[in-house]
Amino acid sequence: MGSQELTADEARTRLIELLEAEECRITDKAERAGRQILGQWMPLPTQWAIFEFALQRLRDNFPLHAVPQGDPPGSRGVAYEMRNVDGKGLYIQTAARRRESLAHQLPLLAWIQQ
Image (cartoon, rainbow, N blue to C red; front, side, top):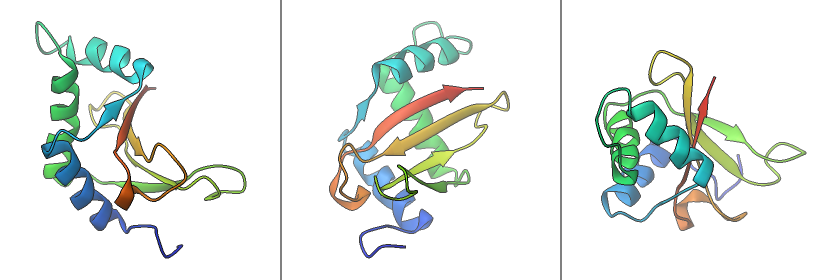
């Protein structure tokens, strides 16, 4: 692990801080997927509802996994993901926007429906 990388627990704490402070971004693809998925449970899924969904999973200590990015692995930093958060294959991934560590970046959420 590089000196700038965080442990999963440190990443969780930092992600919660950033989401609570509303210091976050979401990809267009993730927003579309998040609205579609949350639309199964609520009549009007907003962008903030997507962040709240991820934030609640982080607060509930849903398992968070470090995933090295790039080729070779880790050359583009580390993303952190929660796997199968809805019991139907939904992954929520957070990553730094640039090559810097999560400690200095806004989280970028990506949703992947399996």
